[in-house]
Image (cartoon, rainbow, N blue to C red; front, side):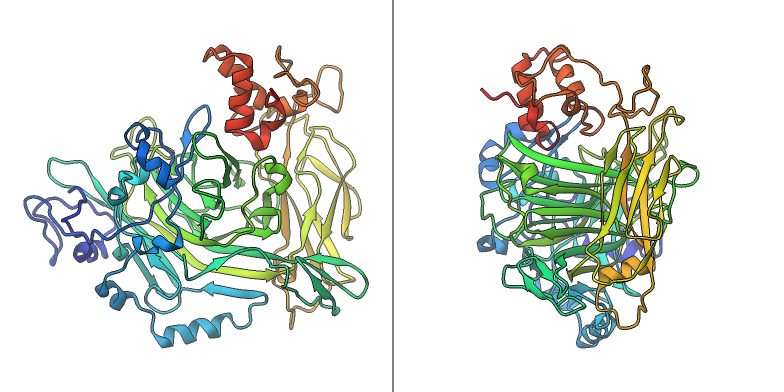
Length: 600
């Protein structure tokens, strides 16, 4: 059964409510559901938003469409990433909801009252959906429908397999569940349905404006994105965009919590930006997520900066520390981005694992202070995650259906959030590294710090500032990138606290991810016993020997370093040195390898 414009899945979505698998065959169903000989159902072919995409396959056929849709390009050695921009507000009619869905999913007054009661005691909260009641709140969300064909992007430009329909999203027991279902028809390939919701025009947020202010706990006056206390301490005020999710997991499964600009102020995608708060692809396992921004020039010269984190379990990494351990598909975890003018930070379970600044993006425009809106969706298949496995093979287990993305809440806070300042990448034998808790609007707290087993707190335990020395030469293998420095505070009565950031610090603590590496992923003692690792030498410098130095060439982008990628393009792809350097440093990995971009 192939989803197309004269078919309709909605009336059949209840067929699998009581089933753990949706392998429906022609003429076979439950008591209420039977498919005809053609597997025909009718789909509301309403105009759909464009979804981000990561494919080259459609480009030869969509040259004209690319100009208007603002499609961009990212390349790495192993895959190409693509995303698309949504329509501007003037074209918001491209997402429409029929009267039946309006009536079916409208949230009632009692549900709204329940939400208000459940969130009134949460400090710093300026917007949320707690998913109380029994339906999607259409004052906050709009459904996206279809498979992209009506906007010239069949498969959403990424060869995705799902058809988005509102019936695959439901609310119960305080949780939104987006379900991906599989349909099997006689003589044809499987078909898949899922759901996607967006908050455009209903919940759009920029950074804290220049006129906003927040009073510190000791009575300060706000100024732009900071708050100054009477003692003269300046606190940073940020907006934090957070969701608590339980992820699906399986080959070809692709859940995402992300944001796109409300208006294309600086041009089509990616000039006006894209913020991926959380993406997970099943083939990487249940414990790896990615945070990404897309920016820069129009395709094919657009840029992106991506950082992933893998949460270790005691089984996968006996050396891992801290309370932030668990499978992301078995329990709920929080995923967040903090935005202040000129800076963003990514978090999982209040662990900061990535950040980017306006200066990091130079010479490209910083577009991330503008209004952005939320998107929640569960994709099936595509060029990045690959397609689901129908059967178990040597490459992996068969993908089970239905798959579910569960959402406990989506929240926006505006306040001061404590954070740990310190180096995020250290050498294997680096000594006397300072980590300090900052942006804390409470005096006289005591702090308990925890560090990885191959790190030692030399001084400062119990205070807001510690000095740490690292010694990882005995590991002799790759260091898992979820090495966490964690701090938890005590000494303050939580009753009456007016800061969500302080509550996080007192309840479970906050953390920062530290990569302990010699930039080749190995912590093995160098031959001369130096604390600074011996870098691989390359016979090129991209014409910029002072800027494109050993440290830059050994920066890790994803699965390789800047130098390795340039070397591969030269010797495996036959590029000239200048062109290879430009491809890596200007087109693909400006955020990491930019200093190696040839100047002429």
